[in-house]
Length: 441
Image (cartoon, rainbow, N blue to C red; front, side, top):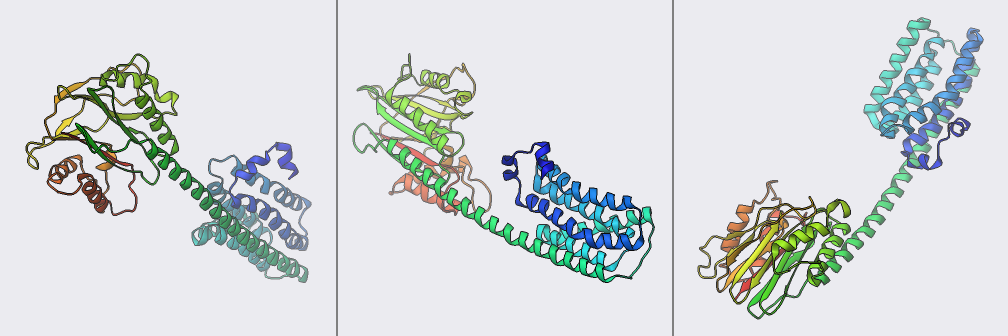
């Protein structure tokens, strides 16, 4: 470890490494130490020059730390450890087998150490490839030092090799047990973190729901809605209010992404619209509202998040509905005079999402609303539903369903939700399910 201190590795970095890298680092040092005595015993029998001893000593001192550094500075330490370091272990050690005259005890020691570590780290595929690396090392060593074989083994070689085999097996089993303990602890921590995150998402969803307005059952404008947060909580929110005695505003927005951040941004936008706190803004003019929102909520200042929105203002005295949209799905307007037969009128203005680009000019349009007409404003989560066969429920199919849905005596919103749930066949939707129904009496 002195080498690590000289190079200046930080302890913080060691904690970030995969357990396999750290255990292999210690395993190499122990394995090489265990291999020293039986190998030296063979070298002593052959009366080889001193430089063979020095080369092996340098190898056992340096390679474990070099392998550690290679994994440490790689993008994927575990992958580097398996694909390079463990194969080089076998290649470099196997070069010594021809020097040891392919002594059966040394061969057995190397094979047991290699196979045990490979099976623990990567199973049979890794065992096969590391064994191939060992065979390559034998061939390379044989080409350098010659292919000479000797089955003669001294008592000291047997003793030291036996100690090495038992020691290496013990350490590998210890690493396997310890590694499994770490995996179990990691899974436990992940479960605890997921439970905390789920609780935060549930609290955020509850908070968003408290910000939504109550349904309106009586009056010239009657409203009902359905809001089902997704498992990861999206960024849907909506609102409506009387701006004065004659003008009624309706809006629905969908923030990009999921999680608490998206929910917080949607609530912030909702508060701005509900309190009418955008400076120099006529909230009866949908295009002006969207332009001011785009200026106030640029994505680069809000964690690169943007949102789509549909904003409309109904004038009771003239029965005119003025609206504008920014990257949002069109609202559906159904005539109350021809229930079940008329096609939906799509209300949208083609323009960019809010927060995507500064200084965007938005367009507004106007239509006349008849008696008993119904308006549906929604996010894409109500129709972008993946069916059980893997295909998506298309927007055209959704509008056709809503046309027929209006002939049913039950709640159209509840029918839609049941149908989407039937198509999805899952407990939760991937995105928020949000739709608002407006009835003009």
